[in-house]
Length: 356
Image 1 (tube, rainbow, N blue to C red):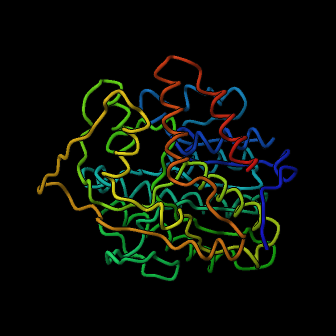
Image 2: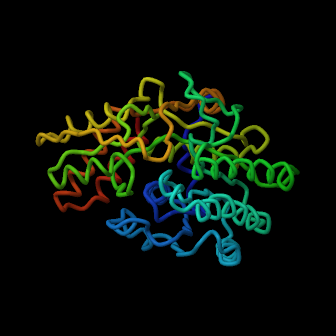
Image 3: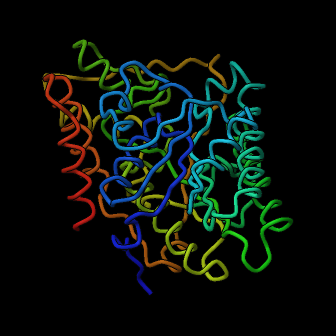
């Protein structure tokens, strides 16, 4: 049965979103606001400058709490005070290379942060739906030619990936141990692929690297041009997350679980090809150069997700292929570079995505 975002469901619903100051969190909160939800965000200060969160000033239309998910007391107080209906956990240390530089912090944030949040949910009787957002990198990557399924082994290679595997295991343990009875909130995880879209300024991500090079009129440096990833526009996982959260709120027994959220296999592509697509759409003679270094820390070469489960359970399918996703991304960065307001364009892109 095909499920869809029910706009009436969101009106007045109270969402507690961790990681709201980040790239994906900013898009999530803007979508929720447009759907009529009441939103409380809990996160560190925006992780980049410039910052999409600051451009949107979403705090004017939502409650924004600057806090650390490693601080269990502050986190619990914030949740109990807001009394949310639904919780979406997006706060994380999200960068593979940063995980190598600072592994202890990565585990503290991605593992213990999840523990602290689930402990807060245990003490918050208003919560009926909890979704933990992890990553496609949670799997033991055997460099297979086919996509990973939800039953495949969780054993990320590096500290970031492994910490997210641990976050999945923590969530499963809490679901079985504390949330299995009648009246308990539904508990799910979602494993998404690499996202692109306007407003990402993160270091060590390929599309922000492309934009920085384009704005400086210099070649794009590509570390791993032959690595293959499941790229998708940020709105694909955002609305998949909302669909899971919505439906498990209504029927815990039927819909809670683990879900891959990835593009169709044809949109899994090598990084060099992705950059070619960006350069062609940007124009101005933009091109890239390989900057491979054998001394760089390990990153996966080939990774795909099988999204059969979310398609079967919800009827979900990706809406924008990689060409459309890249056009939307380039459109956003062009508007930003011209000094024009980006919020109207974001709202337009969200409406376009929802109305397909």
